[in-house]
Length: 170
Image 1 (cartoon, one colour):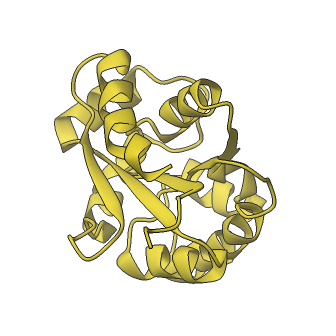
Image 2: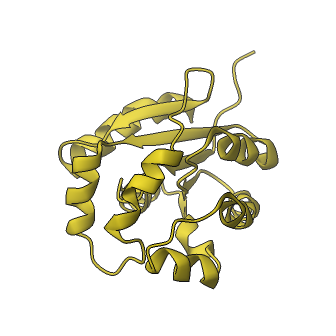
């Protein structure tokens, strides 16, 4: 018997890696739902990040629990934008989903993230918090259900890489 098809995909990575942009494009292409994890940050988290203060682990857990509850509500294929920087966060999302979850790790180095964030408007996360995110990041290992996607190149090239990785799973 084959593996159950995946219907929950979490686009994860450092701020500025394209979780929102790629998630929305993928949802459109796959006639799926996109859930923006940033929409579920409590006002205190947004205020802290806007002020250049990194979130504590407690802050992240409060937010992550809400994201986990939201991601299983829609039916069909669902893409979720959620940093999921630590392995324990990804394990929590997987364990609470009650179904297979696949993580799409949007991989970028610091210079690329700085360039992308410099070009970004209207987001609460300042460039000054990039290093704190890289400090917390635990890159998914080969024991996790995750695809590592290099985000260099055009949006179309990145979407093509993502689709090549996930199409066999759906």
